Length: 412
Ligand SMILES: Cc1ncc(COP(=O)(O)O)c(C=O)c1O
Image (cartoon, rainbow, N blue to C red; front, side, top):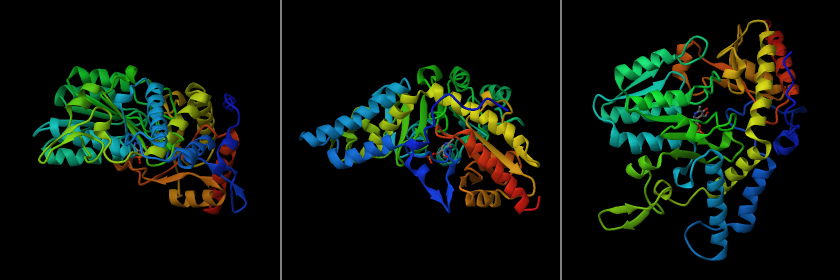
C-alpha cells in the first residue's frame, strides 16, 4: 500500500460543513475539483467584512470605505504576490469562465480575423471551448484541437506539428485536466507557442489549489482560475494577464468604475486592473479569496501537493483492486492532479453517485463539462473522486467500501 498521507495535520476541524452528518453518516467529501469546502477562516473574513467594514470600495473617503478598500486591495496584492504576479495584472472576475470570456472577447475580437486558427486541446473544459467557438464564429476563425493520447497525456508531437502547420494566433490549454487529472507542461507549451507568434492562455482552475504555480516560470499571456475551487467563496475568479496586452485590448464589460472620463459619445478607460472591473466589485468575495490564499500559504502549497499526491497514489492502488473498474488518465501519480475519474463495468455513474451519496460519500458524476474529451474516450460519463487538503486515507476507505456496496447492490 502507498505511504499514507502524513505530511500535514488533520484539517477536518477547520471546515465546518464536514462536522455535519447526512442520514447519520459523516460527510466524505471527494468533490473538491467541482467546488472546495470553505475553511472557517474564509467564512470569518467574509463575516468580518459584512459585520465590521461594509462599504463600497474606491468610491469615497470616509473611514469605512477606506477600510473596505484596504481589505479588498490587500487581498489582490496577496493573491498576486502568491503566484508571482502584480496587482495591476491581477483582475477579479466572477469565475474562471468569466476570465476566459474576457480574453476571448477582448483579445479575440480585436486580434482574430478570417482564416486564423485558435489551438485548443481535446481535454479543455467547456469554459475554455465555448467562448472560443463564439468568437471564432464571429470573426471567421477556426479551432483546431491538440489530440489526447490513450494514457491521458497531450500529444506534444502533434502539438508541435499543429503549431508549424496552422501558425495559430492563440493556444489555450488547461494546466490540469479536470477529468483525466493530467498535468500539462504549460511552460514548455508556452515557449513553443510563442516561437510561432501565438499568445498562450492557460486555464489554471484545477492547478492553483493543488500544485505550486509561479506565473513568471510559465510565461503565459493569460492565466485564468476560480476562487471556489481554491477554498474561496463562490462568485470570484481571477485573470492574470501580461500588462502590455491588457493595456492594448479593449474592456469586455463596461459601465461604472472602469472609466477615466465619459463624454457624450465616447469614454476613456481607467488604469489596470480597474479597466476590466466594471461595476461594484465582488468585495466580500475578493476578501474571502484573500483569506483562502492565506489559508493555503499557512499550510504551504508544497505540503498540500505532497499530501494530495500520497492520497492520489493510495486511491489509484485501491481503485485497481475493485473488479471491473477502469481509471482514466495517466498511470503515474506524479503526472496527475489530486483526482481520479473512473468507470465501473455494468454500473451507470449516476447509480454509483446515488449509492455512494446515501453513504455520505460525495463524488461527481457526469460528463464533467468536457464533452469533446468524453467523445475522444467513447464515454458518456464517469465518476470522479477528487481530494482537498482535509481528506485522509479514511475517506478512501469509505469510498472503496461504498464501491463494493455498489457492486453488490447492482449484483455485478
Ligand atoms: C479545468 C476547469 N476549467 C474551468 C472551470 C470553470 O470554472 P468556473 O465554473 O468556476 O468558471 C472548471 C470547473 O469545473 C474546470 O474544472
